[in-house]
Image (cartoon, rainbow over all chains, first blue to last red; front, side, top):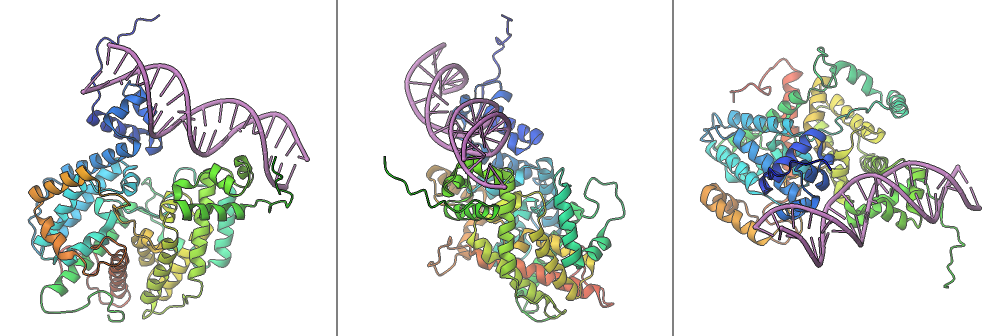
Amino acid sequence: MVIEEKQETRAPLSRERVLAAAIELADQGGIESLTMRALAERLDVEAMSLYYHVANKEALLDGVAEMVVSEVLEEVADIDTNTTPDTWKDTMRSTILRARGVMLRHKWAPMVLETRTTMNPAVLRYFHGFLEIFHNGGMSWDLAHHALHALGSRALGFSQEMFNPGPGSEDEEASEEMLEQMMSELPLFPEFMQSIVHTDPEDDTLGWCDDQTEFEFALDLMLDGLERLRLADSPASPRSAPRTDRAT
Amino acid sequence: MVIEEKQETRAPLSRERVLAAAIELADQGGIESLTMRALAERLDVEAMSLYYHVANKEALLDGVAEMVVSEVLEEVADIDTNTTPDTWKDTMRSTILRARGVMLRHKWAPMVLETRTTMNPAVLRYFHGFLEIFHNGGMSWDLAHHALHALGSRALGFSQEMFNPGPGSEDEEASEEMLEQMMSELPLFPEFMQSIVHTDPEDDTLGWCDDQTEFEFALDLMLDGLERLRLADSPASPRSAPRTDRAT
DNA sequence: ACCTGAACACCGTTCAAGT
DNA sequence: ACCTGAACACCGTTCAAGT
């Protein structure tokens, strides 16, 4: 009975609009809130209309993944990949840290990216940038290849922290039981926990694990290691390649 | 009309039987085939019976995750964690490679483990083993903590390879399009691809990416880096800590 | 070309009820 | 204590049909 103002023909759907709306939805409510039906409602459309622009949900997620990586590409677009052996490491470092910035804006993105099974042009372009940096930095193709694998998902800025405690992980009996067990048969934990607590408790992290610090620590560990391998590779001074087993 | 032989009262359900059946189901059909209904059918029981032994599906997956890590614990039970500075690296190496063996038996396990939000006693015990190895090997608690984070999911034997091409990723037009783009605006790829192809094409991997080799490469890179940091830490010879920015 | 309505198959789960 | 039956809310998706 109410006169609806649907005359002003809402903007027609398009693959781009669908993907953008999907990202917004996931940003707001997490990836589990991204359902075809909810997405349709957000676009003021019937659920089945989406299938005209996207084959199915898997294809939707593929598209979303590509959009996120495109965002990373924009973020690193101004980084000069024309590196030298002196600069490749810092260049790589800031590339990855900028990618991480994008992932922090889309906390659900790592999981979506990890569940993709097919490459997409955006990641291809992104990794091509890595090849430029590695190659111009003086790495062999072989080492560059290893480096790509070694960085793994960290290359795109996420480390997939094992068991980052979500909200409300402080259950009663489970924690209780585990604490008791820890003290009895896992004697190293008390001293360990005590010695690693951070002193400033004003950040929103757990108090003893600063994700950003740990991410950068691991990243630098890899980059430093790769630089050492590069040096061992190019001049005729073979020292400390990996898997030398026992050597300083 | 057919006389069913249900007299021989099938073994009563239990949390353990439910979890074991869930693992079998996932092993056979992948994690997406693990539904409450399919699990119930496998146990010759109504779907709702499961809820007596497990709170809900999330709790089921928690239990499954714990079982898998328990399997890892058994696998590494005989490893001597009473290390020295000379032996910690190799000990760590074989611990992680054995864990990887378990993950290769349960290809779905990494994803399940990564989606868990709460710790469980098994992972706690597992990481306590790491602390023993690190500590006895001469690391400070602080470095041990960093090491734990740096290893990340690799500690449990998986690296979450980005885009491991699943079966049937050789779609026609998508690959076609991407190949064209590669050649035009991504000029480094042809040479790169050509120089990294493996020579023996008889393993079941892609031909140019050997997962096991890459896993071990990255693992050694981390372990070597950690050993260097340990050495730089304990004696009074501060050389090449990470993030020294530019130094050999 | 683009969108819709009704329907289907399949989820996880609640709840009251059986033994 | 342990299991069941019917039902509910919510998925993704097919298909024929509308404009």
